[in-house]
Length: 402
Image 1 (cartoon, rainbow, N blue to C red):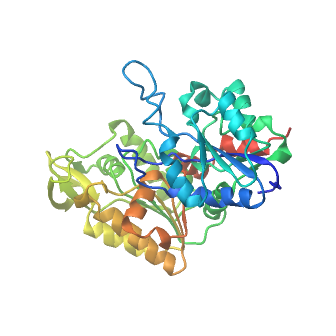
Image 2 (image 1 turned 180 degrees about the vertical axis):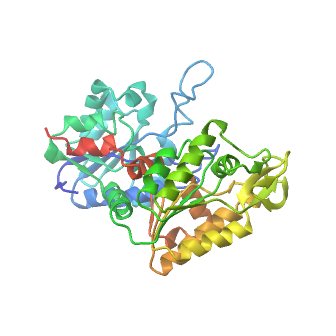
């Protein structure tokens, strides 16, 4: 960070969009913990911190009468835990704009922290509204964007607000700087062999990423629901497995493009099969291209695990985006947990490993290997778009000239 915060209020866009259970208990506080260095640095310098974030999608999940469920989506639910993490009493105000919020932020003393209410309670947030952003900007003398997870959104609190601060008064936070530095290690001359493990449900979500990866990786290991679209495109029998029929031709094109550039795309040789999408429907291990009608693939099998492990162990740079099975079901989590273990072992031997994407982060945390990989990204969509070579508006806004 390039700003002296002593005696100044820092308006910090953090990403506290953490998963909560029905009782408001935090299920995974990774994003909160990752933001702590920036907040601590500012208050240790003698500054004060005004935090703004979103939580969920309150505008899209309104009550039956059209009102916002303020209790369900309130950031008040995380205040106590944030106070514990920071070891200081975090103040809270139940609005992010308006006189009450401004009075709170204006009267902050050095070393104090204030959390504003969910920015997405206002539809102007997602619209990137100028007037709304201007009102948010009143909370700080400086602006810090430390929310990599929303850097690909041109929202009021992530992008528009930056223009209300002079260039010398806006900066990236330590987390966002770290995200960029680690992603650039992969994009700019990675150590080889370079391997990407891609999972998740849909090929359509990963088209641009796969096309970009083909330009600079050596291996792409495919798992998850998206693998069955590739298998069917090659003429395999996939039963009732997830498949995007409209993307069969594109899947073949991606395989041909990779082959032309000497990039090896591997599909799982075997599959853990099930009769329905539930934890109790395990039916056995079959060849991935011979799944019977009435059955579906929900995880990669032992042969695929062994083959993928061998490639990962020989790799010097590793990217993992998306679980390779339905890891939330215990009977179909073995593949994803094995990938996590394999990446951890390769990292221990000196490989650089980056895990990015919400479900991948959950899988690595579930495996207990989170501290054994090089870097875990807090941004799912943002990391995807950055690796795809796209310009992220939340980052670009910091560096725009006055």
